[in-house]
Amino acid sequence: MASIPLLQLQHVSRTLAGRRVVDDVNFVLDRGHVLGLLGVNGAGKSTTLRMIAGVLAPSAGVLRFDGTDLADTPEATRCGLGYLPERAPLYPELRVEEYLVFCAKLHGLRGRAARIATDAALTRCGLGDVRRRLLGNLSKGYQQRAGIAAAIVHAPALIVLDEPASGLDPLQSSELRTLIRELGREHAVILSTHQLSDVAACCDRVAILHAGRLRHDAPLAPAHATLHVRVERSPDPAAWSALAPVADARADGAGWSVTLKPDASAADLSAAIVARGWGLLELRAEADDLERTFLRIASAAEARAA
Image (cartoon, rainbow, N blue to C red; front, side, top):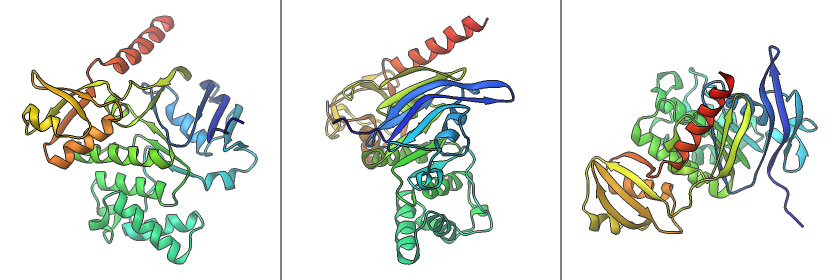
């Protein structure tokens, strides 16, 4: 008997102000997978995520969470969801720790359980040093981390992140990619982003929306793909070979062409580089298959509109 997908969208559409902003979208997502949702501005990404999170109701179609129609049991279903909108819903007058305890209690955790969940989220998102600071006094990057911590504090089965890397510096972005990949081992994750490099580094599937329609839904490049990498402190080839995820590395202009082992991922390579302190500047698929696919879809759609 086939297992029930954790999330299933069946012919989902949404009309706003008389315009169909999401049109007949279908896809499924299972536990243990990270889906990258790509699209230009206005493609319908945020609207799709809001429907998945239960913030908006679809105009047509059905969203199922663990086999249950989201419209039938919205409150119970939302307990299994963690949602970070593009602008994190923070209370600037609260301290980071207070805010996360508050979020944990909103999801039904009480007493010691809420404290344990808060401590785990603080550690996972690198917020331990600022746990007693007011949210309103944090940098944008730390505020974004607090929003991510709030989305995962109750250990939801499905984590929905809308542009989570907004405002993060390159090191924080790299750490976030590693965190998303780690979350994807135990949960299902949907990552909406404009950055193709984020998808290449931490997703195993990619879906591309354009003009409200799903134009592409497929696994990402195989794990042993060759990646283009730039670092601040460039090591020699022997140092690259010492990294567990690396099968081969060679100098390529201003960067390195790195081939991964069959069981390694781009996220594994990113984490290994950060651990060595080499200063990761860029990591992308060398063949740029994802970029070519994205540009082909966007260009074709624009040509049809013209």
